[in-house]
Amino acid sequence: MIVDFIKYFILAFVGSIAPAMALNIEKRSLLWAGFGGALGFCTALSFNPHSLVLSVPQIFIGTLVVGIYSEIMAICLKAPSTVFCIPGIFPMVPGITAYQTVESLVDNKTQEAATFAVNTILKAFTIAFGIMIVTATFRFVRRIRQKSAS
Image (cartoon, rainbow, N blue to C red; front, side):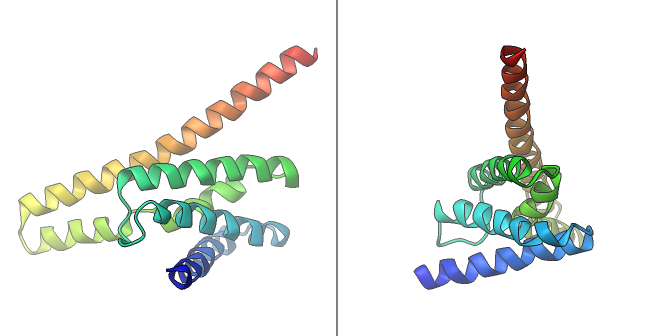
């Protein structure tokens, strides 16, 4: 069990660093971006460690973790939160269900394709919603602190 988590942590780490390098993120932020993706994926995976296909609630929790991590690291390293957020969500992107959607369409299984398509869209919206909630919360708190300081 713990060996599997270490394996998935390393794979999610690499799966976050690769897009970070493709996005040309500064070298000082690369490891931190990879760690955020690994942390989010392993958090999501911990809610159902027997299935690598993440469910919507798992993706939501993982995305919240990535979003909070990104906002905190943005403050600590004085960098935009997107530097950590975008690579961090890559391990949770519903690529498998998107592939299954297209495969079902090619095999002319329209009912199955529709089910996979709805699942893919729901997971993608879940990622966007989770990031939006965290970003809005941090902006709200930042505004309150600025108003109380002045």
